[in-house]
Length: 108
Image 1 (cartoon, rainbow, N blue to C red):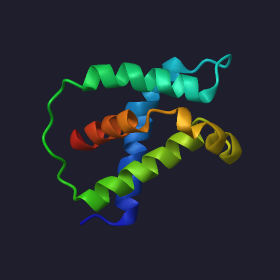
Image 2: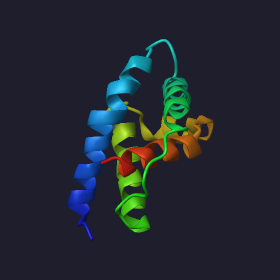
Image 3: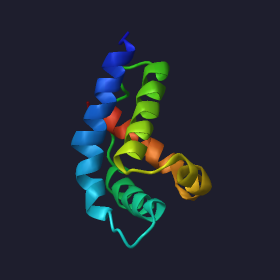
């Protein structure tokens, strides 16, 4: 079982070395953050959707904590304030983003 700091480090690795590298290509200052994020989610999900990976070596609680840390880190990295996030969070395809994060957890 990994401690919380280990899980946070894994989440940072996923955000900085996997997600952000691709997501920053979708960032357009003329579009709202949720449009940029959804464009990334759609493109990345198409790529990873058909790739078969082994189950993660982590338990479901550890995986959930990494996903939570990833989402927090992503929101921070995109400079999304709390009010704007809660106003528009229903416009994000969270299920597909969870699948993307789950994929990256499996290939760590």
